[in-house]
Length: 400
Image 1 (spheres, rainbow, N blue to C red):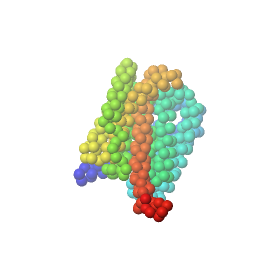
Image 2 (image 1 turned 90 degrees about the vertical axis):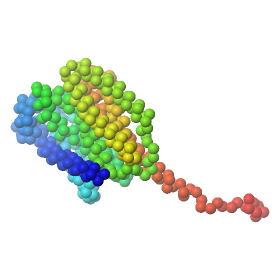
Image 3 (image 1 turned 60 degrees about the vertical axis):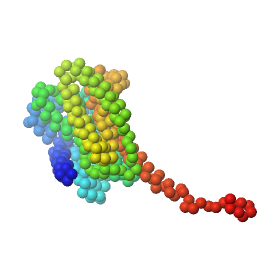
Image 4 (image 1 turned 135 degrees about the horizontal axis):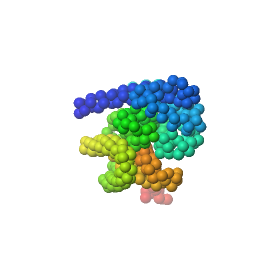
């Protein structure tokens, strides 16, 4: 047990160092990324790095494809990008101050973080509102994924702040980690811009982004879950009994997930080489995520750790439902936004895991709140019972 705990601590430290390194490296890239669009020739660290890791032609293509859509909302986008660089620096400060229990620093940095999230996302929202989905950078599917990330980020930070105000640190922690996970899609996407052209030579920026959005939502939400579970060492939560995910529910969500995966697989296979590439980019990370969560849930149940087992199980149920959600979302996107089947398929699959991860954290939060309510009712119950019965007398002074 001690050896396992030591190994877990080492993995946690390695993960924190890796995330911090990515954030610190991406911050100057985010700050300078859009300067050349406002002033041609201005230094942009990201373009410089990408031109040397992929090719100058790939960079030129990316700049060309972004120039038109970005012209409508350049000032809000520059604000969004610069503030995004600041968020990359504030994230590790928040995490480390929480772990080391530097309460004042954590609260001060958290206030700045929340305000910066709202301001940065406002810039992104202006771009999305002013740009029709079909005319956005990398097309309608990318626009839909960006809009979903924006809503998830704003919703997560809002619920995180509310949880902190209400004195719910465990829920505050989960929502803020999910919020930062959504923000991490930006640096991870840039890493894929550098890696995917090497894996698939000749792939243009549009196809690179399509491959990336197949799994970024799953990866960042999975990372947020791992971080939440690593920071929460409790094996039980007061007032929490039973489960909201019994065997019949687990069977039902697995059947729904299998049906959704089958439909997604057939749909992508009909798309030829490009479809198979997108399917692979979706299935491999999905399979790894499923395996890890399923094993963790089974181990927690085996050792009688009720709370970890419950949280892992709820997230596993959400992950199973993600393909079913995507399958339902595709025709909805086709009809409401007038998309073709391929674009709707890519968008529906791209948002599925992120949306269901958000739903899972919501259900976990409700589970904790329900447990707290149970405890409150137990504590209030004795006060409602009188200590000694009051004798009742008749009119003649005799006891009844």
